[in-house]
Length: 281
Image (tube, rainbow, N blue to C red; front, top):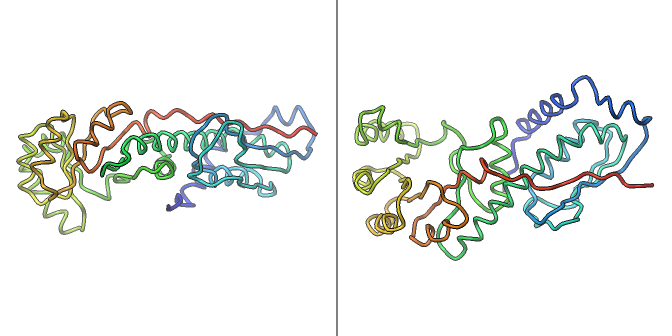
């Protein structure tokens, strides 16, 4: 599992720390002298770990003298009351980094935990769970990494790495065929894959006439999904999309589609409950 780009991650961390610390942590400056401390980040609920190295980098960026030890690995299951990271050094430095570390780690664990629930729902089918571009702005690299920690997969990362013709592209081009006639040779020239979104069985049949890699079946009924799978015979990857949740994902997977994209993995995530607690002398 590839880890997030270090340069992008460090930039995210620096900006997040600067936003929180500003001119200085006046509470810590006021309350205590520059004493040493040791603390643990503790999971307060079950879930899946994602972003432990990111949390470690937050503390090391806040103060390179801090000693940080990761107690678990990304992708590991979490239980309530379990420590995941230990940090020691200047207490003020630990507190400067605390909220940024917890915010990033909590979001990433929440995404990974939700991704794991979706992948468990489609076990023993051939279907895979994909994310979307509905990520938190400027945190996409972390969001998509967390999806992988939970066992799901990444769709395209941005607008630049795959052609995905959606409803507005089709309207803009003056129709499905116009959009595909332009996109297919462009994709061949630039070595890109092509996916097209269709909204009804008629559009689906028309899209099959073109050499595309994937077809997105948007808001298709279960019956229409099954008929699309039967009509295709494996010549193209079929992606089901549109308001899929944990209650509906299994029936959708059982239609035989190859992929289900779930925007909720990153746009409706519940932050995993974590806390940082100092050890008492």
